[in-house]
Length: 108
Image (cartoon, rainbow, N blue to C red; front, top):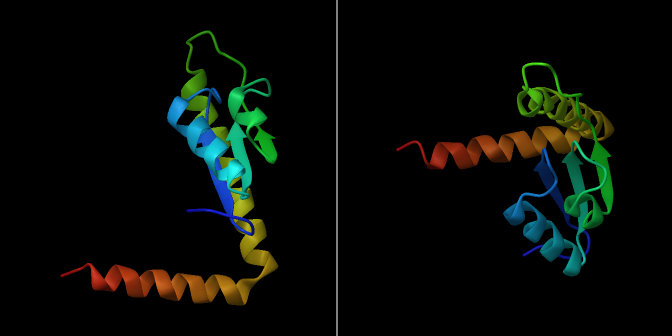
């Protein structure tokens, strides 16, 4: 359903999750920008992306790389959110109000 002027945010630690890569490719083919967050630069997700934010962590002795990447990716997403809201705080407040209204509709 995305097209020109839209953006798809795709997140995958390995950048090889089939459903995520397929969604990114579909969005890109329909003209949307694809922003990816992944831990590996050489991955199908990066190839399908307009912009790739590669942020990962080295594997540790206890092989908790996937968990650590979630923390790193969360920091990247938090930075993106902060930058977007700082860029247009009025739009952010309107969006938050709309989200609250939508949530109210489903409380019953």
